[in-house]
Image 1 (spheres, rainbow, N blue to C red):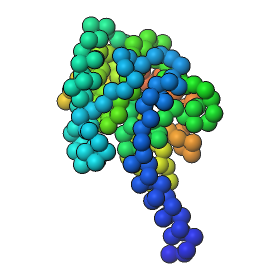
Image 2 (cartoon, rainbow, N blue to C red; image 1 turned 60 degrees about the vertical axis):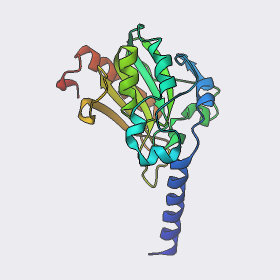
Image 3 (tube, rainbow, N blue to C red; image 1 turned 120 degrees about the horizontal axis):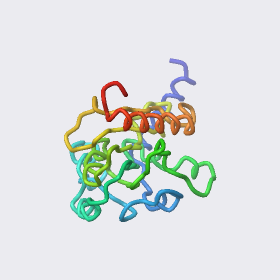
Amino acid sequence: MPTDALLAFTLDHARARDAVHAAFDAPHLVAGLSRPRPAGQPRFASQAQNRRDYLRRPDLGRMLDADSRRVLDKQSGSASEIVIVIGDGLSPAAGQCPRRRTGSPSCSAPDGGGHPIGHVVVASGARVALGDEIGAVLGARMVVMLIGERLGLSAPDSLGAYLTFAPRTGLTDEKRNCVSNIHGGGLSYDEAAFKIAWLVREGIARAGSPAWR
């Protein structure tokens, strides 16, 4: 292997390892959201108490911890069309607001495709399925989970968006739609927002039928 290729691989590998273990600055993210304001408290969390647990026990990342569940239960009567969850996933850096990373003072959650966004929840230690419990508790018709993706060596800050109609605990991934590879060198944030809004609108219009996927 040529030296340049070896050095490039080593650098990409180091960036990927750093991305997995990076801190998720939830309060900073909450402060940067211009609309809508997050639900209840600045930080929700899964049952994974630390990054080690998160990486070794994926099941813990799919369930809210007791304190977060109690806060959301108090809002369970406020049914929502759309709930947006922003989670750290396997790349916490990806979940930070891209506009804030590029110098804008604030950012917005994706458009709801003409449907009202009821809540935005920022969650740490999150796996994709954590959005199912959050959406179910809040009575959402659809949950949009924005989460740092499983890493590719050339994209340590790639964001994925997972859309689930009628969320409930126990759903598996064939029930979801996904917009993936959202980052500076992949799908642009504006194009991803357009796709997400279209999927939200069509998913609700077709009531989650297989034809919308």
